[in-house]
Image (cartoon, rainbow, N blue to C red; front, side, top):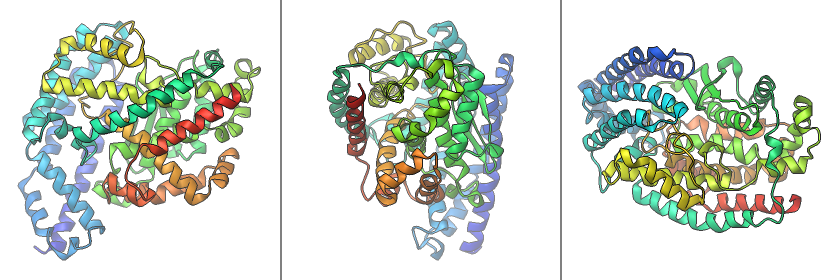
Length: 506
């Protein structure tokens, strides 16, 4: 078999797996949206079956033979060529997958399906004890996964590799230490503002049906194609990209809070616009998959925060907000509203946190995940550990587990190692936006946004980030787009700029 024939067969098999995995993704979306509660048992078996089948197909020894036939050939001589990028990522994934027993893969799918249902019920009832046995099982299975894959220094390194290839615990510890050192005095500057933003204007009556329409209009404006997606309600917002023509987002509504749903929709729309603009012709191969979870998160953070909490955005949308909610914001000035959506103060809930304190929420979870994986922290002691560390970081007392260690779904679906990508995404977002302003012209881009014209920014993102898929690893993509490796300075500069703006209106 020639290298060309071997590569063609790899593409065929990869695309077949893409279709299979998209089926599992649809079931995962349904589980979080419309599946009846009593369907969890069957859904667990369905997910276990599909996970095992996908694992069988991808770990077929023939895949290894095909990869060996292509590696070293002229087809991969150019490291930026389609074949080279695909083969590089197939090899990384294949070597990892072949180390995982099929039984472990199936059991993880089965247990995490059950755990997500148990988590949702435990969160509603504020009963960590009912979730604990399944969380203990998830943690044990993730330890087994890390041990099977192999690691240096810490099990966590084996798990973060799945989300952000090339990143290590040492990298993350240095990142969080340096970032926290800069954030703490900055957060204090916000706290010392002579006049605090009036957040109560966001906590008036906002009818849910109008919230939905307003959020949908913003999603369409920044580039979400509803003919290739939909917006549904769930307990924990997320985006599911199944493949070309089908990428769905969810949110949750609070009639007494405008920010929860609106900024949640902007966030998930950022993810969805990325998914909808991956090259459809490469679906099922690495070139049709997002670069990394951190880069994916950068797209949601860019639209939610860099754009959506900016003054130019609301110069366009605030008059429309008044039309949609005259009773709620009819007496609110643009300055008051802008200050409210950019208020910085410690809070209990990660997804409701401001831009500055958000990363402290991630630092907390990263610290606890390391301890859970190493065995230094038992699951039974997680609530107390969470509460103690949260008070030390934020100066707040956690009133219950629902607003404490039960607030996130990630551990239920086995996403240990996922949380740090949120902070990476915040940093990438600021650095990408700074590059976009430089290349497109800051004043010109702000003028576009002020007029509600987002096309140039979207196309810049498509050209520089979306269309590449996994052609480059995240660090290399960042260097190519911004001319620099990932650094915290653009993010800190963004916050300082916002602080200066708030000084003028508070």
